[in-house]
Length: 150
View 1 (cartoon, helix red, strand yellow):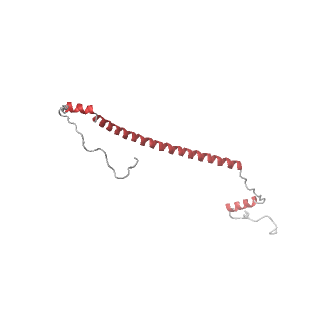
View 2 (tube, one colour):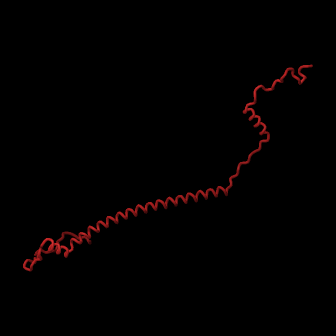
View 3 (cartoon, rainbow, N blue to C red):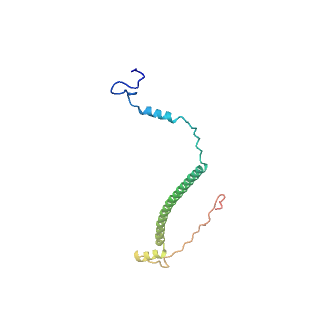
């Protein structure tokens, strides 16, 4: 038998064409090469103008709602603070009114007369004890210069 023409190899096994297994990189390269024979030009994706318009309108509506909510919240907080401030002013004015009321009660002439006669033991004056007095000086005031209209 001739050597080179026969497909038969002497021995118990045939030699493998490649002694080491294929690596993933080589497998992937062979797949890439097989997938590329018909390269197609991809068209640029068109944007849907209606969808973009709806997204913009939705975003604007959400932002406006948020702004309106925040403005209302700030206004409510401001009003609450002003109510608290006004309540404290009312409390102060009530205290002042109570003080003035006490002073008015203490300046009541009948209350003074009663306190003087009953508690302090004073007596009303007789007609012989009352003297009338007339001032000889004038009550007019002289001014040097112009007076304001007030």
